[in-house]
Image 1 (cartoon, rainbow, N blue to C red):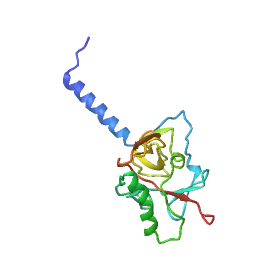
Image 2 (tube, rainbow, N blue to C red):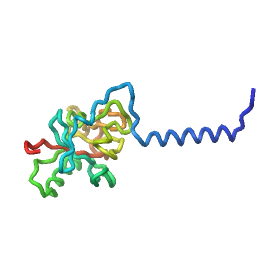
Image 3 (cartoon, helix red, strand yellow):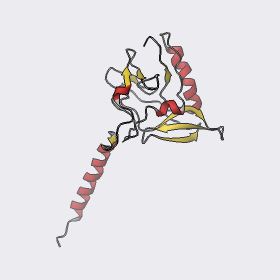
Image 4 (cartoon, helix red, strand yellow):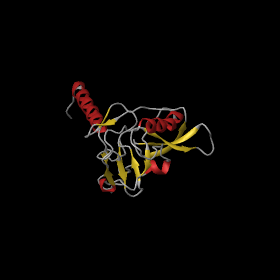
Length: 181
């Protein structure tokens, strides 16, 4: 039996770990599972927002704190407490120069429609929602049992969970689609 030096093993381990890190930076999708958010279910609007055709909802393409530059979402996503997330839509509506329907924090069912269950890290259609952090996002749905908990969806793996409302999570807003869009 041939002996392998410690240096060779160490180099192989470091190479393997660095390869895993690179893979984790891009969504990993199962090839034997059909996409749950196929790109054909979305229309990119002139405003740069995204219409999800089956639900008839319009989502912001980028998370709060990011802006769409015509190709991708740039800037840092802001993490907010649940109360700050609820208030953020009010600020976005005040800052809006267009007479559009009010942006709001989506409920858990609304935010779940853009989760891509065939992929992880992030579990979202990256073509439609580029540069989405693979972390938890707030919904407007509070816990029915505990007043200091609210529902979230994590785009690490599309899971849903109750979290303390003082936690800092990311935010993506939604609104109803206009008939003229």
